[in-house]
Image 1 (cartoon, rainbow, N blue to C red):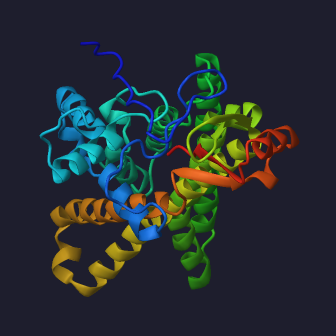
Image 2 (cartoon, helix red, strand yellow; image 1 turned 180 degrees about the horizontal axis):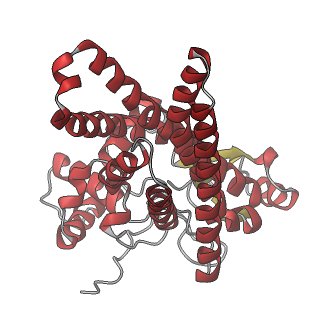
Length: 347
């Protein structure tokens, strides 16, 4: 058995051959997981399944067996077994390449990885070394995650990956250090309650502004080849029509928006909730051993809800009207009788 590449599923029954003679681009997600992707609720529960850390416990052999069940190769499988296998396959295998995504870079690993990173970013009054380390750690992880879950219809050289990584880290540190400097100046010049309150508010906002700005820039830098070269678009049956820069820009914009939305509850709500709990319950306020478990619990709860909620804002299998595409693609699509095109937005 080839452990480097998982055989992609056969074409959907409705698929025909693309213009190059190969199978058309598979619809998204690859397998029917029982959720209705046309509604926000359906997408939320789909992505809740895909981002569940429980998916990480499946071994490679289990994923390969799940692929076989989801493809229909196991005739004795029940409907429930097929649906559960489809959910595991969708969470573990890249829909464009057919490769198993490394466990640490699947969306299921986002929550456990970011719990640690978010705690580090929320350390009060961090030293310069601490600030630099956690911003570097965050951007390093996000670069790897974005690359592993990108639209893979265009190749990206390792030189471009390295360039995007350096630019992401530099942008993140620039925003974080600038915000920290602003908070320090406000705190040292706090001559009134209003200024002191502004300093406290700014201290809460700095992690959010730095991380959300850097996350959006990270997506743009890691996927700018989609802006330049476009992404593969297909008709509803999966037949390839060509590459569209308009679709690429839409995919990058939607993913960047989702990443910013994730930051809102995860970096703003836990500090505010902690302050409220400390004011309300003296036992928690006075017992310092409870502070870290409380922070971890609040951050974990926010991430478990915010990640699928943010990703579900836009469908993974995105579509655009033909009228919004490049003129050459419009001609090609209309000649094929197509009114809308489809593409993998990526995660």
